[in-house]
Length: 440
Image (cartoon, rainbow, N blue to C red):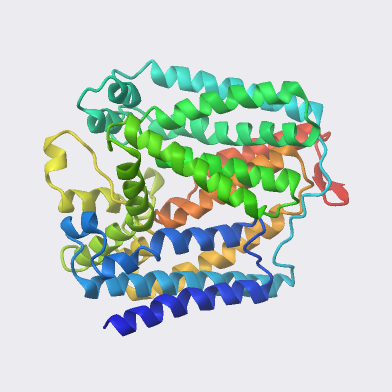
């Protein structure tokens, strides 16, 4: 059994990476397909090795103790990565397109665009202030005070927030990321002090928004996003190898500090161990429990987890992440905590359609994401394009750690894409600047 595991563990990702390379998807270049693939590999696959051999004591003690199920998770994750890459290759062949279309070579900083970015910054900060006015406790302040109840405060700020948290999050975090990334790009291009000041203001407000609920991951991903902006602005979309080590160390130290500040760990060694376990197994353990839950406890949903705005469709209303978490830890509800157990997107595909979902959904995900990447690349380079593109890469790469149904009716993308296109049009006399030409 160990031999079977190790054979597939090394063969599946090797095949996927070889296919990427021969198709032109260089892993050292900024691109949607490459980044999603790498995030899938890191967060849904690599961690199965220590879990299979029982090396992650934390996960072993929490119930991940069946090597047969871990083998299944590894095979499903490996198949997902491979099918995702094949889907992207298929789309590339249909479009007869180069794998990497963004060149990031001809930037221009538009004054009108910059003014709109300042307006968007003001909106995001205003929404943050409105959100804070409705809170009784801020999780990060509870943690800094050394009080108990950080988990409860975090829940009341997110899953259990008494209001439309999604809309607050959209403007004070997601929009703020695009604004901060855009100002950083503008500063790297023309080195004006004004853009540095605007970037620092936007980044500090964003950091507070990201950390106020005492979550660790969002800050780490934002720092990675800044590195991608740097690669696009200064290195034509190619990751500088030395920079990879620098950003890796920065992310590690920043995340470790969050673990220590929030009281999750007492020292750097403990924080480092938690980061490794959370990074490599945090999305895999839920997948393990999904295989336990479906279909033995709950039958396949057949679309029951899909969004259903207005109750128009004959499905929806089933929250997989909450239901699996409540089954795994029934005590959370007694403590007033709305728990959540998200996992790599094949978990939701399996929960709805069984093995067929694992075959079909990853292929179409790769197919559609290449189409998005290819047509977005046609827009002429500008700071807001880089800011939105990097946000889009981070947004879709969450498929490695969350379900796919949220992308079927993607309100975040629809709203932010509308804002992006409006700024592009308003900044170019109601035209969209395309590589080499403009269209109305």
